[in-house]
Length: 112
Image (cartoon, rainbow, N blue to C red):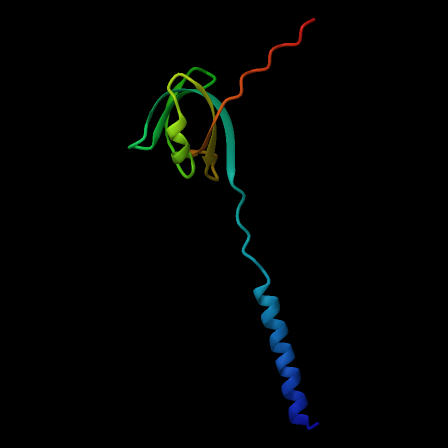
């Protein structure tokens, strides 16, 4: 083989290696910040995509519903307990309700 052929093969192998190494890294996504809270639903507005709830401290708040929570809003009934998944920003402030599930009833205490 000639020197020119060997140099070309080495160049191709090096370029292929660099292309493979550069394409193998995926961007790192920041972790989603969520928390669950069990609340009583006071009211909801399908058109405005909002829900008004009474939290554990008895305070009434209205929040936007986002993502798949919008579809789950159809199952909500005022006066009933639900577990909401709240989406937060990096500062811990609420962005909206991203999921809605019926709250599981509290377990009865074991007989003594």
